[in-house]
Amino acid sequence: MNKQIEYYQNKLDYEMDPWDLFTGLEKGESVVPLDTRRAPAFLKEHIPGAISLPHREMDENTTKKLDKTITYVCYCKGIGCNASTWGALKMAKLGFRVKELFGGIECWKADGYSTDGTQHTKGIDIKRSATPSETTV
Image (cartoon, rainbow, N blue to C red):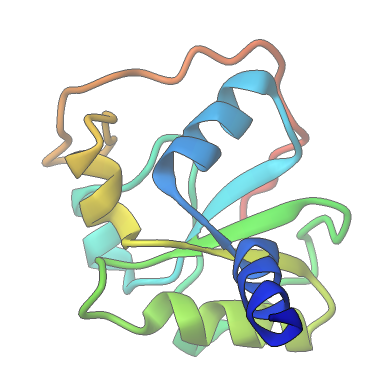
């Protein structure tokens, strides 16, 4: 039983679903969505407030302006994509606090939340009660 409890606790420690992210953003918690896909995908559509940092470009130089006290929630397209896993791994190795968004932007939209970008989706908008210290790369 202890192994099972440990497994589920670890899963919650390292993953977040769209509702948790949405709620955290609305409450002004220190979470920032981190889009780990290539830049064209980000420009087309992304989670509001997200930073674009493709996982293949993550290194000490491209992350030097990011705040290590914030939790970055890495996401990609969805279940069939592993860019968020690569991004979370690389960010963790660089000393950042990270979680992975379960289901990526596909689950974000399936839950009815809006997106930004040239092909944005209308949905429930984030109404922030406070603004975390956001950083652009």
